[in-house]
Length: 402
Image (cartoon, rainbow, N blue to C red):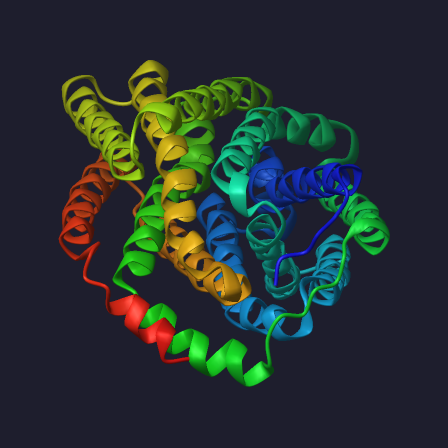
């Protein structure tokens, strides 16, 4: 069911969606400059702290397995409120942890709560069906801008408040989002529980277009997330950058996201979703080849790492809004389940790939380059596969039988 709100109400919900995007960067990006401090505090290696980010992503993916389908039956609002409360509990638990194992447990609790942030995509489908691609580009561009500034903000928080600072600010911001959710978000349950779980899963898993679009988005996200997780290992651990210099360099990474968003807006008006995704995959593949050749020839340096990564990031910013809209627009009446399934793939891919890369202690840039090239090749094959079955009509037959 699509909610009907006054334009002023929709503007406040856009603000809410952007705040959720801001909230989402804290557990993954703002914490990056605190890796050395966390390692010292819990007497573990940088690699183990990097694992905590990967495990966080996997925890979010598992949480979304339940939250998305339930939201179709129970509504988005109650589950988002519950998730915000759980994420605050997990965040504060991290602050008061004394051992690495305790910290990891509360990171998982925080991840379970942050799984509710997936509902922002379902809300886009519910409330902005005619403008969802444009709004997703806006949200991704805003996320890129936040990513560019988050390590710098993290370094400031680290300087004044230590590694606990990002968790304190996360908790405060989550409380603000909780209050805004109570005030402005409508409640629109749309289906029975049985319909939300049983029929939806059958239809989603049978829809090749949905699976291809979600996989393409997940492959692009894996390229982004793998770099985010291992960037402190390469730049702080490998190149010897200070936490502040790392944060300054990371601004360029976020700028690439913003540039990618601007390019995506232009391409949306002149290209089909297929061609947009193809352009993004070509950029990621080219960036991977550039990174591979540069590393083999000259070894690790800041330009040889960040120039290819910036090109890849522009490709990611082009692919994800197009692929997500392509997948979710096919299932407007089951937006919660569809968003959940799509984002489970997103975070599972990102978590698994980044964990595997972080476990390799040498040649991280070369492995990252191979991830870029491999994602581009697999994505290109999937795109061709999707074209062959785009007009099969199989999903329409299933929908007609409901």
